[in-house]
Each structure stands twice: as structure tokens, then as C-alpha cells.
Image 1: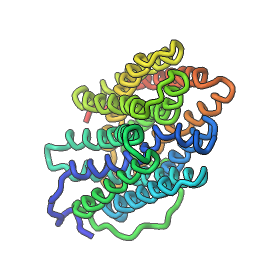
Image 2: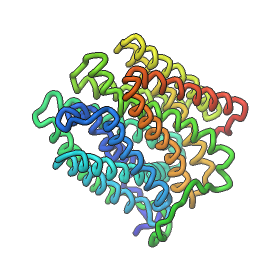
Image 3: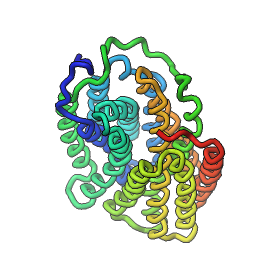
Image 4: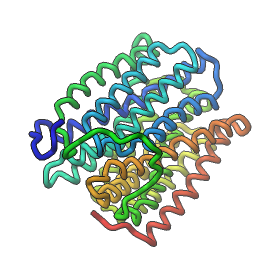
Length: 397
């Protein structure tokens, strides 16, 4: 294994960000296809959210058990393992024969995302040369959100306009994973003296003393923002089809893409505003976006839903990058991967627990009522976090 002191920087942080984006795209690839699976297998909206949550539970399990694995064995082997799990998930969908294999594919996808979250983010940041730190920070968060957004856009286009809608998207992803494996193999290792992994154990949220002041508000803001992302990736396709009577899968994928596009734009703005302004500002913009999403549900308006998606995504991106920047900058290098993984752990709780709650509420309230209830709860949370960070602003880095 190459140590960072001797590794020639043949490939820079942008290549690592590309690998990150490919890996995350695979996790949202099935989003526009859930309606096809529902028609084929005959399950309810609650089952859709459970299938989606299986992914988030896979992420959480990896973050709890192996969040700091890349700090011990190196970034590159963990990235290769994550790509292997991503390929295995795609194969589950290719040979899908019922609900058990769908759940298995989503759990494997979650395992991959859990490994990517800490290892790929740390690799992108550490491959930056002096003076490139800000660009690398944006590249890491943009690769995460941009990859998540490109997944449904790609699968929606292929499913709508190409043959074999439940096969071709995953074949395309397998090809991208193969390219990403080659790039990862050529990436320099950034961990000095990587060794053997210690025995897997439940890590919880044990944080270095240096990050404890900035972590709570940053992580809770990420929780609120990821809850919005979870709503769009799990429930929005059904709402678009059943309530708005839009059945074009490419349109569905594009609508989901808009929230992640907004997130990427918010991350770009976050770097210019600084952490002290971006974190509370992101919470405020997230509230506005949620209000618009709630309005679109109440008046059944597709344009308002899209505007709310972009606005909410911008707010999520502002708060997400500000929080991640503050947390990663405060973490000592030997604990950076594990600390970033803890940050993502809280974020992915936001993308799983509320979404399953929405799925359960649809049984009694319907999609519209469940969505309005969800929006109201997340608005309250975002307002509380925004007020807290206004009174206790984090330090700019």
C-alpha cells in the first residue's frame, strides 16, 4: 500500500470526486422505477418506503460498524470495496425476482454508500494540493449530491426512451462502476502507513473533543435537509404519478434531479458565504422550500413542486456543505474519516426514519396528507436549528 509521503499525485481530487459521484448515482438509480416494480409485484406505498429505507439502514449499519475503516486500512481499498458492493446491488436488480432480492439490492447499495460517505469525502479532501482546499470541499459535497441526482435522471431517461426499462439502467451503471474501479486503482493512497483493520465493533457517535462544539448543530441541520431528499427520492415519484397524473419516467427522474441540482447550487453558494452565514441561511431557505412543497401538495401544482424542490435543495446544500466543512476542518487528520462518517450517520437517519413515517401515514392520510404532515415536522426542526446557530454561530474555516 502506498503511503501519502511517497505517492505521486498522478490523479487529483477531481478524479476521486468522479468515483464518488458514480458510486452515489447507483444508490438512487431505482427511484423512477418504483412505479414499475409496484405494478409488477403489486406492493403498497408503505412497502416502497420500506424498500427505500432498507438502503438507509444499510448505510447506517456501515457507518456504525466501519465508519473509520478507511482511517485504518486506507482510502483506496475501502473505495474498491464500496464499488464492488455497488456492482453487487446492480446485479440484484438485474436478476430481480421479487421483493426479497429488491431489499437485498437496496441493503447492498446502502453498504456501498456508507463506505463511500466517509472514505470518498476524506480522499477528495486529502488529494487537494495546497490552495485547492475550498475547491476540493465543493467537489466532495457536489459529487455526493450530484451523483445522487444523476442516478434518477439517468434511469428515468433510459426507462422511458430505451428498451428494457428494468435492465438497461443497471447495465449502464455496471459499466460506469468498471471505469470507476480503474480510476480508483490509479488514485494515490492518502493514509500514512495503512494497516490491517481492527475488529468491527459498534462505534456509536464517539467524537474527537475538537469537533464536539460544532458537530450537534451541523449534524441536525444535515438531518433536516436529508429528510427532504428522502421525501423526493422515495415518495415524490408516486405523488407525481398518482396525484399529478404525470406518468413519464423521464419527467419523474428530472423532478427528483432538481432537488439535487438545487443542493449542488447551494453548496456552491455556501463556499462564498462562509460557514457562519451559510448554516443558518441554509436552514431558512430549506424552510421556504418546504413551505412551497407543502403548497404544491395542497393545490396539486407541478410547477410549485419543482420550485419547492429547487429552493429546498439550495437550502439543504447550503447547510450541508457548511456543516461538513466545519466538522471536517475541526477533526484531527487521524480521526477525519470516522468523524465524517458520524456526520453522515446523522444525515442518513434523516433520510430513513421520516420517510418510513410518511409511508405509514399514507395508509390513513393518503399521499397528500402524509406529505403535508412531513413538511410541517421538518419545518419546525429546521427553524429550531436555524435559531440555535444564529445564537451560537460556528467558526468560519
